[in-house]
Image (cartoon, rainbow, N blue to C red; front, side, top):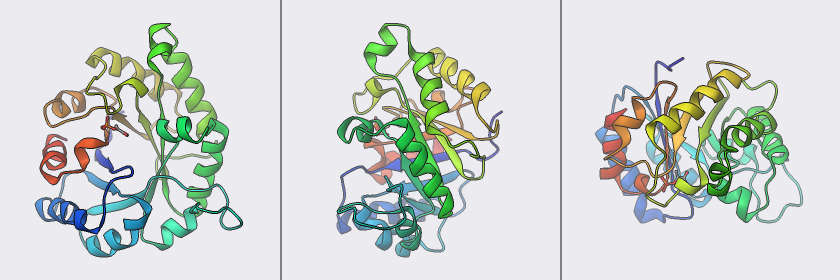
Length: 241
Ligand code: PEP
């Protein structure tokens, strides 16, 4: 099922200070009535300011992670309730950089997603194989296992988005073939707890390849890292949706 309204989501990662909010403002001004959803996920320090700045615009603001608990003794962490309070509407969870840098398991990602849902946030749950897993023919096994273990049982199309992000394609300039993306997205669609859940592709999406990726059946948008930092690039990707 192809979603009526696709989503272009930008993940700024650990990039951006207040001066960079101008990039977000430029996106909002360029797309006052977009035909698709637009989301920017800045670092936590900018969520409140960006959300205030973009209030009334078509651009949503999200977080890049949250804790599984609502509050407590977890120095340096941020809860889903805090993100919601700061104006976020979505949160990226289980990004491969968090799985690798912070040893996040799929079970923890599922707990974080449940916390996000309880706070009214849409959870964008990331899954994807490493290069070694692809080379050894394990791609579908890996992503389907991550999907099963990372997505809460009661996930719906209203509260959950899945981002398929091959780890080897993130920030490398390399992308799978269109057939490889289609194969994974078809398998994910068949395995979703709610067939209406949006499926994003992520991994070196750029202005030059966005249109052909968005034309693939079962690709409902993109999660974009590096190319979301500059309004000109992200705007060109949004326009291709
Ligand atoms: C990402 O980090 O989610 C990502 C897709 O990064 P990039 O677009 O830079 O490959």
